[in-house]
Amino acid sequence: MLESFLTFFADTGFALLPQHPQNLIMIGVGLTLIGLAIRKNYEPLLLVPIGFGMVMGNIPESGASPDSEGVIHFLYFGIKHEIYPALIFLGLGAMTDFSAMLSQPRLILLGAAAQVGIFATYWGALFLGFTPQQAGSIGIIGGADGPTTIFITSALAPDLLPAVAVAAYSYMALVPIIQPPIVRLLTTRKERLIKMKRPREVSTREKILFPIIAFLVCTIVAPKATILLGMLFFGNLLKESGVTERLANTARTAFIDSVTIILGICVGAGASADRFLRPESLKIFALGMLAFCVATATGVLFAKLMNKLSREPVNPIIGAAGVSAVPMAARVAMTTGLQEDPTNFLLMHAMGPNVAGVIGSAVAAGVLLSILG
Image (cartoon, rainbow, N blue to C red; front, side):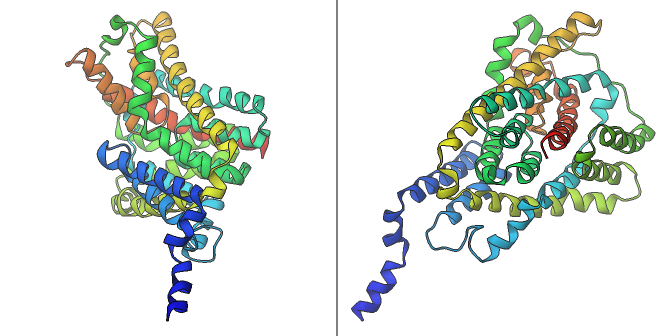
């Protein structure tokens, strides 16, 4: 009887966890992510699944790791082969309204400017000794687009996927903390008080033609981004065509929610201690922060440059929304503007560069895949 109990006890977490202190650290990280999501409301739809998956994947002998035969192992197939990011883009396209960008086409430039963070960080990663493929995977964090980050990292540097994915989603969640200080540092109060002209109305025909034309143009420039951009614009066409509302509604609700749950659990479970607690992980998090800060700064600075060259003033706050954390970055821009002037509503203006940033990060991923793949 005693021997059976001791055998059972040896296989429990009480006996195994003290032998794996690194797993305890990762469980603590997972619980921290869950706490941030619940207490601070930082991207809860992402951080709760990721945090809980991280706890699951770091229980010794649980079989909840991509390396162990079981459910997580088979679900992780969708990450390794870039399935989930493409499906997320389908739902994202069905949710996205490009009207703000179409009504003010010049705001596309702000979304493009924010992608400078990707390529600046690429060179920084090379300087720190990462291979070109690894540097491309790290640099894409600057796009603030989790699915795109997973898509390119799975293709170029799958060994870095746990650290890169967690870094990307963590910084997406921390947009309200990271961006406002950078905006205030780079702008004057007079600039932050700029009120922009009301956007024009966009016709139904424009909304229908845009996903078709944009898909053709973008994929000619970056053919390797065809899967991501195809799913994004196909989802948007379902939304705007007016004849596939049932499909669009499914894509933007139950479908994307289901994929997000599976993606989050798998990303978290993949961040096991042996995969995550490596010296390069700290470098990745530092470079990810650099990427995000540079992307925010270049968006703001380009908006200031536009004010020098254009008659129609642009509030430089919306330049920070050029990173593609949709719609978090646009909401942060609106909140920052309201703190300066409670009557200055920047949300619709900020959505222009925000959705342009989604397209820009996908095109940037296609360019990196063409060069490095």
